[in-house]
Image 1 (cartoon, rainbow, N blue to C red):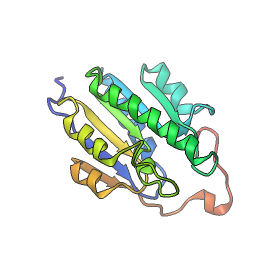
Image 2: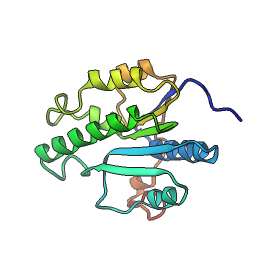
Image 3: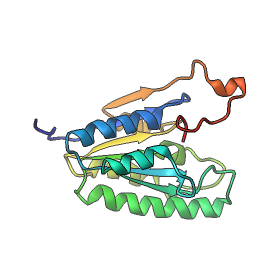
Image 4: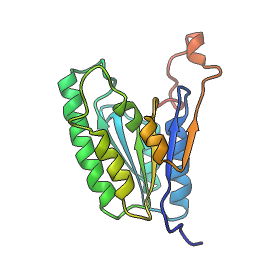
Length: 180
């Protein structure tokens, strides 16, 4: 079967659980069709082991955690430095012309940070330009809460995941094999 000639931009946003999970499902589907897939995470830290990373490595899908965790766990300067490095890394990966699908996991979350300045290390205008000027065949998936209107305007698909009910509300913490 022939790969699509022009890449799509897909956005998974909203306050519900499952945005990264949806993107990973899409990545697995793409890998099944022999797509070269990269998943690059802006907030999650490599200090933790995630079940999806273990499984994806077995499938030959590259997953890189470039963040340092929740914004309240480290200093603004530490987060700014991590975002700067992540953005430089992602720009190179996107423009390398070696991928068919790239997931920019939690990019929306990173762009929505208001507790400290980020525009000088993760400039919104550069994000827009990268989406517009990426290799023509490259599909990009962007996940995370609070998708910016500019990102949604560029997208070919925007899915909003809304919470209806969550076991956290019943006091059940993150579940091994479900959240991580």
